[in-house]
Image 1 (cartoon, one colour):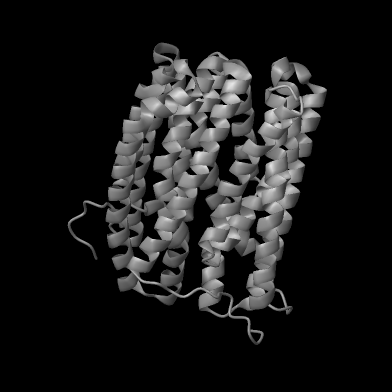
Image 2 (cartoon, rainbow, N blue to C red):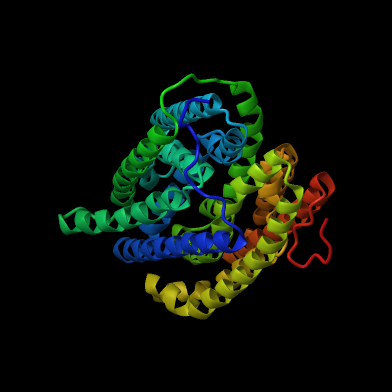
Length: 442
């Protein structure tokens, strides 16, 4: 390894230190949620339910395509960078960073070009109100994909706040500010303008994040040889990509199905409830942000006892935090939903069902992170893909009967079943008991 190339400038804290970092992550995500909520409330009130529903549907498609465009390399960074750090393989770290950035940018641009071409050839495939917003959203895709990879690199280097502040705080705040400025300058409050504001905010936050990461990496990884075992990277990354895509599908499939089956106003109502649900999801994200890469590092070192202890403490802390956060969100639900407009308060039952599902799923612990970080990503991908298909099937059955409540019930049931099956898989494949309520640990 080149002299001075330590690969990381972060210490290895204990459980208490990780808890403090996770609390900081949650605080940033909560602040980002505040910005996002303010932005969504602003857009809902400015655009009205129909235009807001169009924006919600377009944004969901853009987010899914952007995440998919990294081909799993963003999430794989949390596995490979700690591994290369443990084994002093700076050449492979340099190669992975260059390869991942190039693939993410190229795949995002390719997906955007293909989507725009398809829309140009067959404009009748979508409703007229969706056409221009979708074209603008295509410009977001390569930027979104590259920022997703940057987030993964920062997480893999244990730069947790650098990983989350730009995409979740700066970008969300930028969307709100850009929308206010655009409307003040006379732009119409329509979905196209909202997506254009998202494009501007994404570009700015990516420039800041990428600039800081490059400066830090220049200090830790000076110029030197690169190795490109790309086949091994992709064999690991592609199953993780499937997991991530299906996981994103769990978050967005309900909105997508509703977009086909119901009116935009009903989609907007459901989307508002899912925005509040994100506060509960942030707890899981905060825990994963500080532990997934440490699971990989402990596995690379063969530290079985330390790994089991981290899982034991973290599963219980995460469940308690999710339960407390879920109760607070439900208590504040009528007020927060009312910010979107008087009619949005009817989404409270949807919010209650969704929160209950995620809290129960959280009780099964960090099984997904363990499976993907310790070499069982294919099993995790198979389980996730099957359950994603089940989720869509349940929604197609329940939504025509129960409307938006059917989508909430399907989403909650499947997320709980996924947590259970992943916990069983972690126990059988890795010998690690992940549920917070497990009485015995190896």
